[in-house]
Length: 399
Image (cartoon, rainbow, N blue to C red; front, top):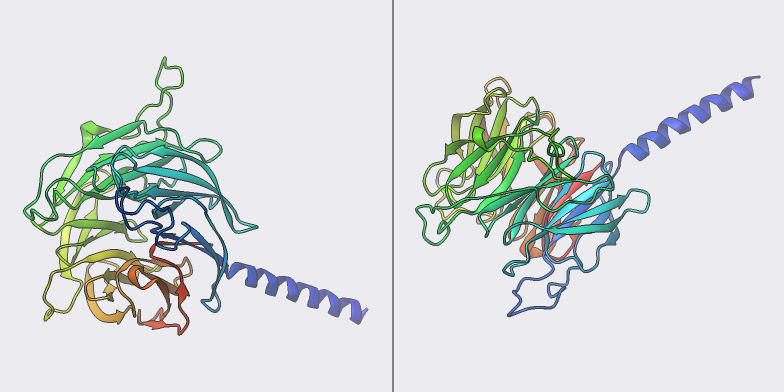
């Protein structure tokens, strides 16, 4: 009797241990540049040595990654978005060729760790640099950087994309003739409550807000036509300091505050978010670099820890990650530390869902640095081993 009882205890223990081990096994997806030239100067698909999107098994206990697969024949999948179900992935094609911007849909086989191409549709503009999936899993928005526009596509039952149902373009210019000669839409971000879409325009120093309806469906009396989920009559615009170049926007865990990284201004802007009106009220503008540093700035990405205690910002010119503490009541920031990235061009980084790891893609050094996060202090401790991958431009961790 005691033997049977002890065997049951052992079996239960093994189930707990096995479940915990599985919970720590995640996937790391890496978007890259496969081609650094243009159709006139460098037409070979994999001229950079990259094959497209790379899939790794990521160990949440050790921070180690094991390559499982990569795509074939996908040109410059420079930015990725993962659907809420974790089974579909969307990649924009930053082709650097006129009229060739597109966004591709993939099915993600979680057992094999492989991506299967579903379809590709035009992005509605040149050089798309950002793609988002709404939390309902029904819509994809792609931002066309060179084209100065963004497009909205419906997601089908198989995860594939319809041709865009709405495309909006902007005109004008900013004060910097080299960088702001026209509109450059750099990101498209949904509010956490899914009521609003925010468009960050580096060229016009502006954020545009559109009321969003995820439930938009076929038009009345239409044979398959789709209504637009965006209300263009309710648009609101928020100006950023001239020459700042707004790039990426993220919301805090509670949804009350939003944080913008300025590419050219090298600053982080803090806003209070009003869920009723969609208005972003400015609370703070703080440098993502030491006060003694001098430009020009090329800040690139911004993310909060899952617990909302710390905010991190990447700076390509200085090759650093800036660490801020967050006042969770006021939303404001305080700079507390800087961490080197050990490589060139830290364009994109991500924090895993557990908040234990921060991963930085050093684009021009062909590698990813993995840091362990101290959840008490926010400090970053780099692992000695690097993940080697050609020209990493976007990182996504899937639990």
